[in-house]
Amino acid sequence: MKTQTNIARELLLLACLSALWASSYTFIKIGVETIPPLTLIAARTLIAGLLLLTIMRLRGLRLPTDMATWRLFLVQACINSVLPFTLIAWAEQHIDAGLAVILNATTPIFTFLLTALVVRHELVSGRKLFGTIAGMTGVCLIIGLEALNGTGEMLWGQFAILAAAFSYACAAIFGKNFRGLNPIMPAAGSLICGAIILLPVSVVVDRPWTLSPSNASIAALLCLSVFSTALAFMIYFRLMQTLGSVGTTSQAYLRVPVGVGIGMLFLGEVPTPAMWIGLVCVIIGVLAMTLPQRRRAAAQSG
Image (tube, rainbow, N blue to C red):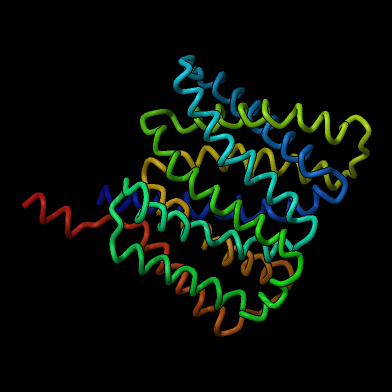
């Protein structure tokens, strides 16, 4: 019963993470209307990093001081925030947020392939392969193939989203290096490193003091920083320790049903039967990629 309760809690956190990151595409779309991508992402990482440092101080926690850990923070910053955040923000100047969500749903595919063919740090079972296929099938059914008709437009923007998805996959695998650390520590450390990298570039390229961002863009930046970054990263690094890299990146599939739900609640959209079937496929895919291998564990214990 304890194992079931724990898994239910982790899956709930996975759903929460998918909602936080699904909303980030809308926040970014609003933000880049009046804030250049580099400055938006530099501010995002700085605000989120400082917020997490404040929370750590209130909890009596301190970041590690050894250089080895900070080198890991720096690498994680590059592949989990600096590169993908900037690519997505730049791409959303040219493509719709919805299409960005679709293309970024390929992250679990990249994670599975890297795990199976390169690092092999986790058990790659047929069930996880099935989950990968089921999840992508669900995404296609929910969105509808007609939504991909615009994939030939702004090709570089779409390649940028795919590159960001691949970077996220690398970050999910690299994040295993932080096992044993409180999840808030790699979240805060990597975001601070990201801000240190991005702020000088933003100052040189965008000259932020000359900008006149709208109130909507500022509000989107704050929501993006607090909820879709600081809170999301705390959940992300926790799930890396409990569900593994393949299981954690499966939340990319859940972002699409979240979008469908928002459309039903606020836009009055009525899902088609194919969308409902797709939602079932997504749920099956996530469960297949996250639930523990009980039979194998039982056989080994026997």
